[in-house]
Length: 303
Length: 303
Image (cartoon, rainbow over all chains, first blue to last red; front, top):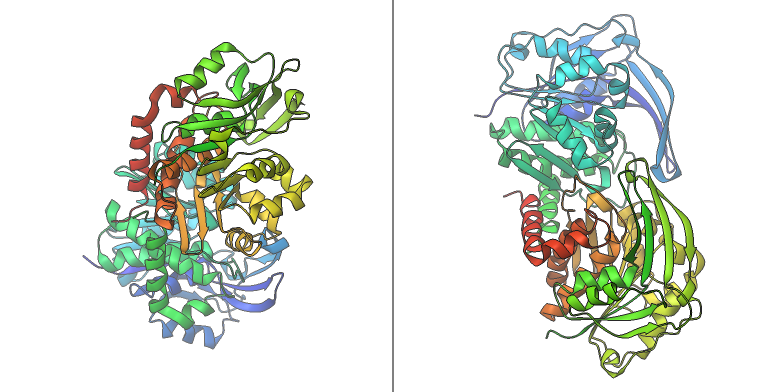
């Protein structure tokens, strides 16, 4: 049965420079990207913290997508989490120029009644300690997803392994799956994640698509072909958000439903990377997601 | 209509060291791998040169697969093309330790009547000058495929571009497609190959599968999931051989037929890398190819 989706993670202001353009103080962070993406599939609640510099226009932007921000703390004296980054050489590498935790420094998540009772939960990319703290407050979630990255694999491995064993689906990219498991082959890495205790693992490989390792089988989804990359920031977050949103919307998280959700996730993420922030996604919305999802289905069929 | 397949390329003796094992003086080279792979789909003729050290057992091995070697020159005084290579770090990189052209040094391909009249032709991975020389001798081929690699893109670019414009399908891997076109995004690279004059381009991405850029559309095939990699040598050659063999066997090279052929090619290549040389392929044959092709089809279907 369809249910409420809770999205926890970071809310940030990003200053991003790409080989093509740059933009300052745009809404970013894993929870923002994920909640905006999820909102095209299911009503979403966001959990996180923002600072005293958080713009009214960004509150409006989230509300325009009917995102419930009653679990977002507004810090009275510190600014919003801040990230400044630069992409080089046709987006092949990126460098963090500045990162400031600000409001996140001593953030302890709090959930209201409504958030605690969420049946579908995305623990967006943030420290596994914060993810575990949110997880621990949930009443009886039906399906929980955790997204992660190399930073936490390197620095909070123990907390991450513990979390991986508790959630229903782990999402990470191919190099992170290899880093996490010590396997150099993507198939071995995916299977090693299951042995590590993940119930189900989704490994993303950027322009090459994504793979699902599930007890009921294996599935490969191509990426939507993007030839006009503008800003890769948030691709993974919006992938995870769309996936969780789709699952919450249909209220089924079996193998078949996860496969279809991956196509929607891939379609949604492809729109995120064609603009800064989620501008393109917000401009084109569900019609374009649906069109891209159908196209992905088409390009992966040999008959 | 189904027709004869001619496979041109190198025939080599390889000494290969992997992190798991090593083997010396095993049959290799693009024509050997490709003709053996093709032989499971269609009768194949091989064109190339071997030396005075070429083993009788290898002649028998090719004949056991009904490969016509009447266009293979036996050099009277020089040894067979020789390659010694070593794979490092879980196969992530490889180094050529020794390479000797030997019999290939001043090889000029010659084709008999039967080879000249081949309707389906695979110009396996070898210098584009040799590939063009074979191409120039053909009477009226229906469908020609050229496989290539970084060496020729770097060293014989002009000859390669000229060849690419004449054949029907170009096969290369993702990093080579990027190198050839100067594009850093795989989709842009594929499209740039068409602009360069290729009628159709097939870009392989190893464990992530392969992509077909065709005037009638775009197609993505997953790789067969291999978790027991033993020797990646010849993966691309056997992919190309199986693809060309399948096309020759069904006698149709439209977009739909190419898509299906990619699944067979991916299935066949996955067996090549699970052993040295083509041992696994020759051991398991068509039943296992068919099983893997069906599995690839299954893992790429969301419904």
